[in-house]
Picture 1 (cartoon, rainbow, N blue to C red):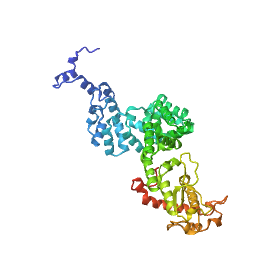
Picture 2 (picture 1 turned 60 degrees about the vertical axis):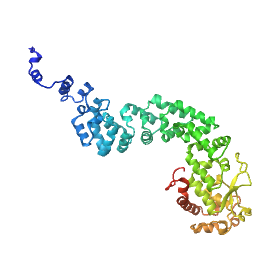
Picture 3 (picture 1 turned 180 degrees about the vertical axis):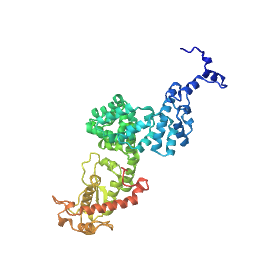
Picture 4 (picture 1 turned 90 degrees about the horizontal axis):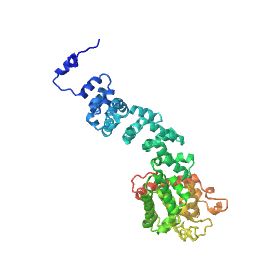
Amino acid sequence: MMNTQSIAALPSQRLLLRRSLPIRFCHFLNALVRPLAPSAQRGLCRSTAPFDAMTATALQHLEDLDIPVETFHGVRDVGDLGRNAEAALTTLTTLSSRQRVKTLLTSNPQLLCVPLEVWLDFLTAYGMSRQDFFGLLGAFPELFSQGSLFNAGNVIVYLQSLGLSPRDVVATVIRRHPEVLLQDVQYGLKPPVEFLRLHLGLDAGSVRDFLCRCPGVLTQDAADLVPRLELLCGVGLDVAAARQLLFNDGSLLTGDLEPTLQLRLHFLTSDCGLSPDQALRVLRSCPDLMSFTVANLGRKWRFLKERMGGGKEQVLEYPKFLTKNLLLQIGPRFSYATERLGLCLSRSSSNNNSPCAERAYAFQVASNDDASGSCPCMTPFSLRELLDGDDLHFLQHAWAAAGCTTGRSGVPRWEAGITGEVEEACSVRCDDQGLGREGTGASSVWDADSLLVDFQKFRSSWLEREGARWTGVRNVGVTGSW
């Protein structure tokens, strides 16, 4: 039989009506739902405060981390906060220290609205470490607050279809450019990949290699990539050279190319004293200049001018000079040729078939007696022979240019410390050994290993003595292009 009592007559309602404090509908609804369905009630009331949305366990986590609840008043979706806060806090506290978790959440409170444990399982399945995952939370929180696992999965599948391994995806793409996981595959990723294939002429393997070196190109608009190739061709580079330059230096596709080009041309005209036509000619003959900063080029120009006594003639004759390593090649090799072997840079009587300079420059024996050319094995030693090739190639040409005369007189500035094997080998007259004859060479007379050891010791000494002077860095090391 149906109860026909009025609502006011029910016992529960009589108790409610006797309460002195007013009860709003939202409070009454929350009071009824919270014991039954803690997550469902939060979606029913968008005005719920973070304190009311989060579970008691989540609030206890925040108290342990000394994070005030007011930190999360700015979150957009309190419902997501209530659903994910407890699990997210549990995940974060297992990844790092309390202080680092507090710093992360204070700066990015929206992370508690994200199912972090699912993201963690997803990315670690592809090889990302837990430490890198925590670092990614602070470096690019937008991936988790704005992205989706579905889209990130599509991006990773597409990258793997291009030949990238899971390790490549994690170590090169996500770690360096996590915003790629926010891109749409069809309209965001495929256009730049098509540019690499069609305009740069890269095959599948080259595309994969390029993306591993420069994943940032995946975030570029394809409409901005084509004009970069056209700009390089517009200054006189042929299409093949422009393509090779962009392939070798992907930063030219992701940075501001036009200012970069203008700065290099300005350096060649203002610092090196070249005319605009000469600057363009140098750039066309050595496009790799675009890959070096003006500061890097300036250090090498200063060394050429102040230490080597050269100038723009050397730049015109051998533009690649500005692309060589100052600490590993230019500095120690020049000093070895001048200090060990007594050579100096001067005009050569024969033209080196250079299209840029009227007369080529070469290293010759500094003393008048040795410079007479009486030794038949004396050969010109140019900047190209100084810097092109490996250390052994340099040593062979340097000793041949020194004349390989008898004993220490053929090494005017011999220094202590060279091994006995080299000293004995170099004391043999080059005429007796047939050096300079057809089918023979320096390697048939000298102990190559001993020469290399001597040069490496000399280079180490030179780095300690002059490295900081020409780079401005106290501990220069031996890496980088400098």
